[in-house]
Length: 177
Image 1 (tube, rainbow, N blue to C red):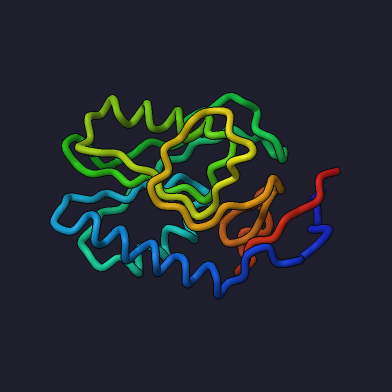
Image 2: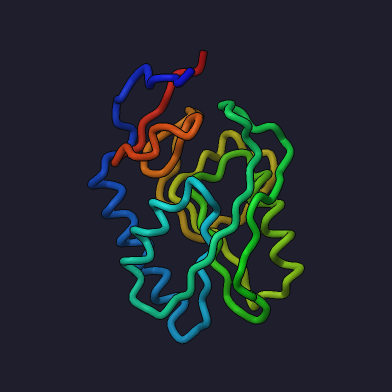
């Protein structure tokens, strides 16, 4: 059974998201000028953010994806991270910018950073649209951050609940049962 949103109140508007993505892209473009950059999107939630950010980055950049999950249709992390799809691009000696839709507990990103570091990139940094610091269980170094958000389960702009609501052009939240 599909769960409908109990509210569609806007937490972060489409206009605010677009402005922040442009600002982040300018900073990334300046920081990685002249470097061999690979954007690695964490699927599935990051794809909308990544597409918009990529279009705003003004330097050459390669793109790849990795899929990892610590949620199983719930609004809370299971605590167990698994990689469902690995990179197809070599990252040894390259600068990796790991893109996430949201940093929550930090479990998934902490696991991915450790895993990717074994492949010996020149550097690895994290870029996230949303940061939910109140839920952090593992420390995660976030270099580029769009917005700090409260401890709510958010949807929209690529983020889902049971694979629904990714298409909302803004960030909203669902009330937990």
